[in-house]
Length: 153
Picture 1 (spheres, helix red, strand yellow):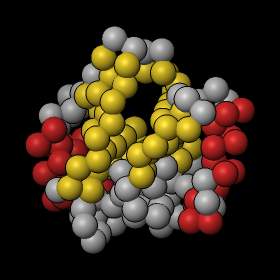
Picture 2 (cartoon, rainbow, N blue to C red):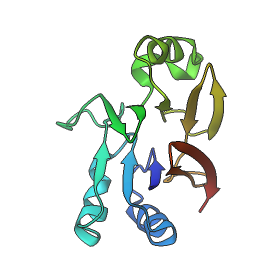
Picture 3 (cartoon, one colour):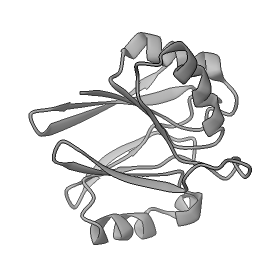
């Protein structure tokens, strides 16, 4: 399974669509700040499932603050990160992930890409697809093994 992870689109739907066209994902995950931008993907690529969480700039969104789900044998947790104060560090977020047996921890908010493994948890921030140096993450899930690559648009 090929998973495209984006965050902080801030209205830049064209960048998001370009990433989808480049990567041909099986699933798109958006980590907030203009979660409504995903409507462009849903309209142009209705066959690709999209999951979103809202960010601090999505105050009028009816979306979820967080999302936790299974893909294969991997437990994923998505959050924008503002509710866990990720700009001050990841300790709170990692502690939460450990308490929930999370395998893949996805967050945004900082606009800075991050890809590390700590305590058997893949911790990934795709950066911002909409501002500055536009980045996103591609996760490959094959035979129970996950890889992650952070790419520039």
